[in-house]
Length: 79
Image (tube, rainbow, N blue to C red; front, side, top):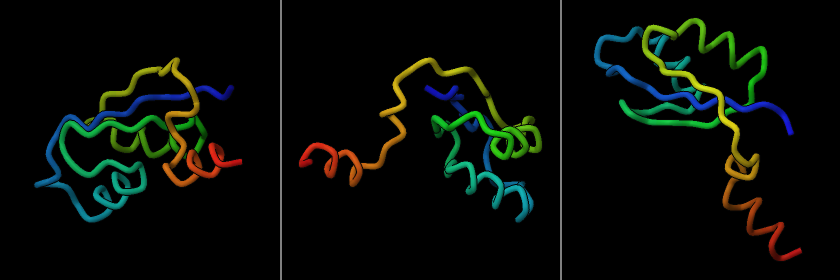
């Protein structure tokens, strides 16, 4: 299983630049307090470093199945 990280937005988007908003949208974070479990890849780490003043990052030792979409879970269950 690949390593995962849990990213939480701890500050508001109200005074962000458009580029910062786009980076947060790329991470899948929409509002303050929002949390996402992401793969620990080089690209994700780069976005996290750029936005480290607004994020809480912690290692996530959970199941990789938490990242699957509902559509994929449904397809897997019916197969």
